[in-house]
Length: 293
Image 1 (tube, helix red, strand yellow):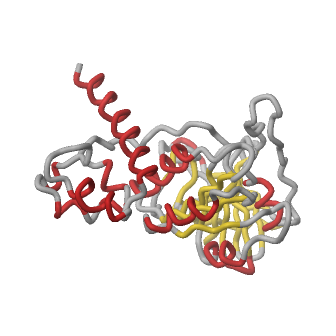
Image 2 (image 1 turned 135 degrees about the horizontal axis):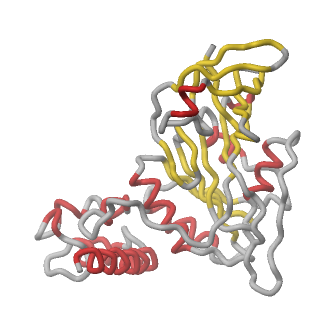
């Protein structure tokens, strides 16, 4: 039968097959292979009885994320807090760039939405083409828009510690007991609570959700360069054909740049988001200079 690996623990692969969960070992040839099974893999398994089984083969993957190590993801849900910790928008944009590079859908969930800037931030990312959802897990249920976005998807939750990822998992899967951290009063950052990757199955939505370790920094994807960074900002893609230098324009002040002459004046790209683009562009250029040296 075919199932999906939802958890790795103590050398066992826990495989969801419909409503059943099998604890499996992998065939020796798989354990010795460089391409070993990981969370998210669709696998062929043989049931041995008593809830035990054997992983026979790994089916072809749609994709593999390296951090966190999970396969066949369809979307990334960026969770950011509107209070403490303050929303780290450069991290939000990093994650969205990584999602775009991997051809994954990006969704933004602003939790704890009692900040005056919430509508401004919502408009900024909606203008860029992203689905933006506002809610407060401490004051109400999971927003219906977020439940709709999860339906039929394999989603990875990403964002800083303490923004509500584990709380969201707890609301979605009441039978699980993830460790929920709080925010350090000294650093105003969330304490690291999730230490491994696990897919949680939501049968009512035919969906899987992966909680991941929180992080305050994320490296840009390998292969990204100063010529391709703008392609991962959806609101800047239209400028490619309008710019004087076409695809060679890096949108950083070149003469005839449509971003400066059209998108920024019309606010088709938000000035704040453009500034973060320039910061990421500078980082990519520095990496290129070091590599060429």
